[in-house]
Image (cartoon, rainbow, N blue to C red; front, side, top):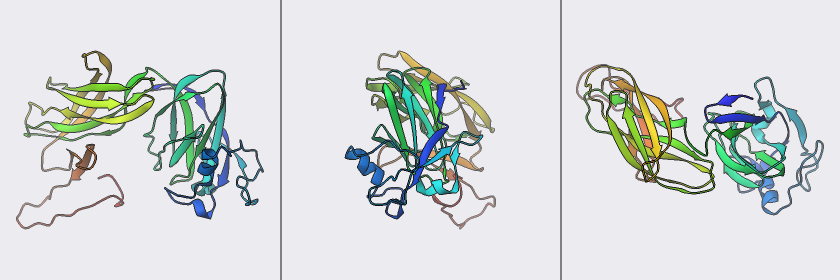
Amino acid sequence: MEEIEEGNVVHVFSRGMYVPVGQMDRGLFTTQDRLAWQLASNKFVTPEAGQPAYAGIPELVWSSIETNEEDRFQNRLLRGSYVYTSIESPREEIVLLDARGHTRVYINGLPYEGDHYDFGYTLIPFKLKKGLNEFIYTPGRFGRVTSKLVAPSRPVQLTRRDMTLPSLIAGETQDKWAAIRVVNASERDLRDLVITCILESGEKAASNAGSVMEMSERKLGFLVPATAGNQGSGRIGVTVILSDRSGREIDRTGITLQQHESNVHHERTFISNVDGSVQYYSVAPSTTPGDDQALVLSVHGAGGRR
């Protein structure tokens, strides 16, 4: 099977069912999610092709669907449809759900985050139960869903998916915040974690990174030290090490940061006053020197991250 950075792919979902959500269920966060109500009230029935999904609405029936050559469930109706997949497992086993293109997923009735914009960011640890395991994906933005199961390479690991990284600015001497996801596919909470960041030039910073609940993933902040070299632009190799409170190394990974002069397009990070997370913004300095220039603020929805 395919090997990815976080483990080995043990199953790719290629057959499933879909059903339109109906007019009352549209939107990212709906209070009239019929399948969620069925799951919560223990009334969900494993679907069959041609079977009505909702009592009293005979025209909304489950239809079979298979993935295309890119392992995607995809057609124009999926922008407004639930997708259902399932797998029979011969044993209990902790795996990671690597899915994308959906807004939420219910795994054996329990809700988890989705990947609405199809970025490939989510990696959900959960325990396959012996027997039938069922997955329901709510509609995402583009009408496509990809889903596979991964046997994790280790119980606790760093993943380079969805990192928040600053630019290193030549001449600046203060440490900068970054954030990386920790996947805890173990059945114990992790507390008092430490993340150490070491630049290829030797500078080092260690940060108290907090905790991660059992069977979950969490994005943790850490400090990136300033570079000793004050001039120039280019890539800088970085080693990120996750340790426990005793200093025992749990995992490490390599990342790359960009160093820039302050007068070119770059990224800056900060700690949010709302929830303490690491956030970022881009700076596009004026290319024309002079006083009394305008400040242009571009926010989410303007067509890109930069």
